[in-house]
Length: 203
Ligand code: A4P
Ligand code: MG
Image (cartoon, rainbow, N blue to C red; front, side):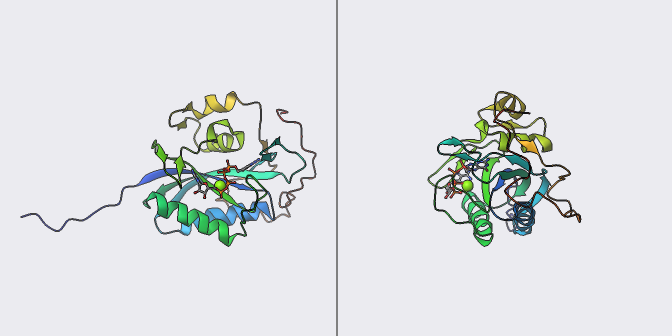
């Protein structure tokens, strides 16, 4: 006779993209990484440093909009798809996220970029994220964490990033979002960077 069955939850590796262009962006991203890690069923294993990127709107790149900080985290997840999305949306909501305009300004966006090499296409969730392959602000911070990363159905992340004309910009002195917040006053808390936004494609 067999003993009681014990179900061990399957662990999936998630790639989650973070974005913020309103409020104290650096603090929002750091708090978001902590909140994701504190979620039962999610363990953050790595987080990139934030990078700066020009806002992409439905009309294209728009340097007149507040500049984004973007980052990527890697996490081990035992939640199912709906529970993962619910958890990320609850963290967005508790950090002031409102949904008014599609691709509009936001305090916090958390997108599932990849879940292992799965392809998911439901009403609520598309994975890989349908626009990840064309976004430097997703691919470049991901490459910080895993230079050999691959995106399901699209190939090497390094190859995808090298084909883009759009580039992100490093944030001076920025370190992994898992590191303690720097003590020194930072100038990257404001979405209006003191340095002018270079034209798209500028180094
Ligand atoms: N949804 C489907 N698939 C996913 C997924 N893989 N991850 C659904 C997360 N959500 C997913 O998302 C709308 C719906 O998408 C959700 O209800 C969920 O069921 P949302 O967060 O409410 O709205 P959104 O983020 O504006 O939508 P969307 O179309 O995913 O936006 P994108 O493509 O992520 O673009 N410019 C810069 N520089 N940096 C940015 O981070 N982000 C955006 C948002 C636009 N411009 C940007 C940036
Ligand atoms: Mg989103």
